[in-house]
Amino acid sequence: MMTKKRMKIIITKFINNEASYSEIRDLSAWLDEEGNQKVFKDYLSINYSLKKDMVFDSLKAYEATMNNIKSKKYSRKFLVQKFYRYAALVAIVITAGYFSINTYYANRSKLTVDEKHVTLLLDNGEIRILNENIEEHLVDKQGNVLGVQNKDQLMYNSNQGQESLLFNTLTVPYGKKFEVTLSDGTVINLNSGSTLRYPVKFIEGKDRKVYLQGEGFFNVAEDKNHPFIVNTNQVDVRVLGTQFNMSSYEEDLNIKTVLLEGSICLYHKDSIYNHESSIILKPGLMAIWERATNQVNLNEADTELYTAWLHGELVFRHMPFESIIKKLERHYNVEIINNNQKIGSEKFTARFDTETIEKVMNSFRVNYNIDFVIENNKIIIQ
Image (cartoon, rainbow, N blue to C red; front, top):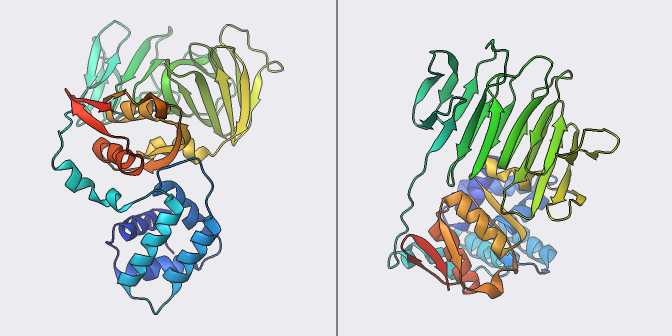
């Protein structure tokens, strides 16, 4: 049985003309299984396209590819040629130039990115740089072991005995991600450009409260007697035990919370919690809190779309170009200056995985004539 991960690998090799004949046969067999045809079509549409919002004949494109891939009489070369024709239909704007990225960049300036470090601010004001290549104990100045760092993960001990709240602040710069396990077992993944302030040890009889700036995925350990509260500069999210993603970057107009499991309550941070007056979020829904008006909209959400960053993926679906720029800056730790203001509000759909920032920008250049130059380690869109 072909797993989703293997399917992605084969399709990636297929579109790059690197799949073996046996891999093409595996893909054909996988497509024969019920439901996989839609998965395949949707995967191609989002992963190998860079397009504005527009309507295309996906059924016709899908049928064309199915007939070609499943045909046993076609040679591998012929299958690949047919596949490219289908990919062009799905992507609408994908061109041969997309596959000339390496040649194109041979003659362009290289972007040099200054690496920044994950830092930990201890309760006494001491700042530690967390080296993501090592494993070591986290020890305070008194010699107390607070936890263990294992590369890009920090795990706090659960048996510390302090009776007052001592806070640590974890800061993740652009271009990095980090995971922290709190003393109660709650696991939090922090995205690039995020800061989390939290107690070293939660206190018996007190709410478990943490403070987020940026984006984090929370897998909250269940404790019915001690609610877990995530505070942003405007919103509190109150849970008992659940999984959700919260994005609250200061420069964004909205605070977005997407629930995967359980139930959560949202309310203004200056309000006293009241279950009846709070906004209740159920799994599969997203709450969009508008900073300017404090209005909240609830929408159905594709949870995979909002958690793709956990796997190193960048997914843009009907997203304005100006918002894409912000995400690229955070993900790659680069500065992008857009001098082509007319495309700022245009919406695009695309997915990137292991591509460099140069290859990502070249995809826009190839498909939409969005040209750019690299000057003083900045990307300038012309």
